[in-house]
View 1 (cartoon, each protein chain N blue to C red):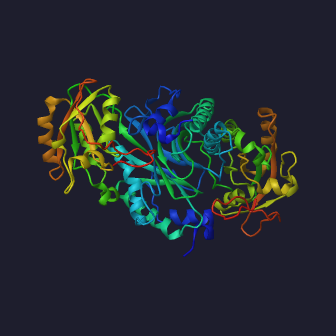
View 2: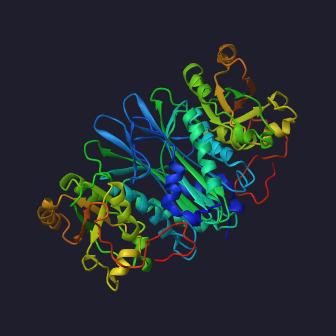
View 3: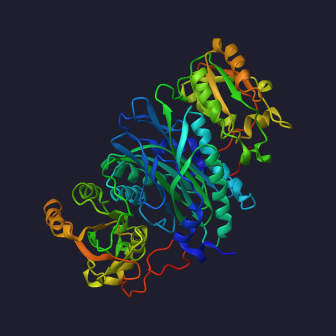
Length: 301
Length: 301
């Protein structure tokens, strides 16, 4: 009988969602950074859930405030990739009875601080015991109905760009990153990307997902990848947890976009790294790393 | 340093939510069965999250379809207690890499079936590995803005009533119960309860919570508790996982309510079990069971 380790995360999700039928008020379901649901004439509702698991996303040596910060920031990053605004959060906490209360109040303190920064209300939650510490965040928010951004409207020839720099997140940035919320909203207004997502599992894993969502392939120039200090192109490709935005835009719009971006966000690079191609016409870097898979028994990144 | 086992679930939640500030569009936050958020003029949004943990809420011997069914049904029960309608669900799944895919597809099959029954769309989710199997469900829905029901508007002298029968859920009903969704909506229209909640942790735990939310105490007649076949009053009081509705209504309305209830739901009992009192004037049953606490090291129920 096949196990999760045998089939991997993406294949698991495909099997689980098989046969799920959606009503007409669901504009985007599983497969985008957030689900999109019709609300009012001018606004859609965005919904997202995300989990942080002990010894997968953090360890008990991680400062608890930073665990809480990261739990919320990861979800904010998904709202950024929709051009949306997060509003209300619910927190599920699973913990061993032997855990010190102080560790948990530290986590919540980190969650409250970043929630305040981004205007998010913590409206409820649930607690249960379990063998290890686990946090699941569910968040709802809004996006103007004419401006929501999807993963799946990419076109052959679209330029691919990333915000910021990639690689080496494990040294600490994965706990302290600023989600690109303002940048996502600005892009939804000024760049109208055909496809967009946030980079949580690494370009190596996420870029093929973005291409597949539009039925396309991609070509990347490894030397063009914007790298964090001390990182190789292979690390920028495979490390993951960058929480930068990856977008696909009409090639003729790139020059103007880069100029306006520099004026708006002078300290944050926006870099062309390649382009979408037809299926079978892509060119993938020859790095061995394949990005982060939650069910791989040994991580290769 | 105190641990979770030392302080228990309710005290933990109080400490975690300390200092949480809410915007004016949040009508009810943590502490009610669902959070209530302003949406349109005629409708509020309801938000709820809930977790099922291996060896706490189910074991790996539980048929997977019933695990999935229970995960969704528990949240539907919370919407019932608000007089609301669940609409969109997101599922977080944490599982060991060694788990058989078939077990998980079984769980999802159970979730899809009951979601279809209640008109719920599964719009997304998240997967991660972990030491044990854990499901967290986040659900959003709606309630007419003039009709949402709260836990906290109980008054001294209100009659306390429960739907259905209590106790012995562990023999199987905890996996197969029907959430009282139609009943909750009917009560919101016809009984206008001052306070209402669903019984997940047992009367012994939940009734004190309901009373406390209104700053009241309660008096219960143990002999009046409606019991499932083969259950003692102590079991009806302390077993938990009944997923029946507990309501507090104006005493003068009871007679008419019971008559209309019998006409509407002829096969489901609605039973007066006691009344709210002023603080310090209550009368609790002398059973030793104190209901279910998620962080108690040995369950006493």
